[in-house]
Amino acid sequence: MAANDEDEDLLLADGLDAAFIGTGERCGQPNIAIYDKDKCINILAENMSYEEAVEYFNFNIAGAWVGEQTPYFCRPRGKIPMPLKKGSAKKTVSSNVKKLRGEGYPQKQAVAIALNNAGKSRRKKRGST
Image 1 (cartoon, one colour):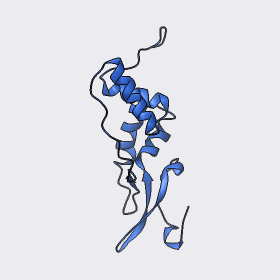
Image 2: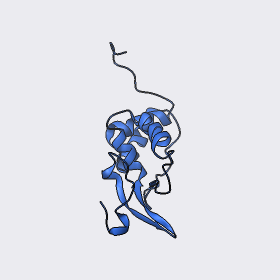
Image 3: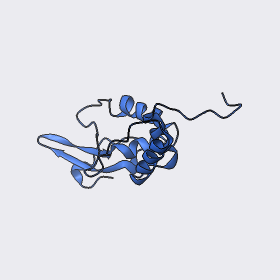
């Protein structure tokens, strides 16, 4: 993924190639890899719940210092999400799901986020543990 000779030694995050958006330059320091935070979480959520992905990302990825080349995780400009509506009514949850889908979240993640925002969780199916 190196764009030029200065980027050959970039420290890249394993499994998050699809979230890589570029490199950052800093005075007197090596270049660093820059990732889209939301895309990182969505990639992680392919193998775990959205809530688990957020927690894993915050603790194990964004919260890890691996030296001066530690990657930077950001929300690209224009992607800062607007707050969700407050409330637990079905109409409010549905509106929040629609808003999240419009922001690009997959259906299951949008539902999980909206239900979490409402203080609810998805009911377990009968027979599941």
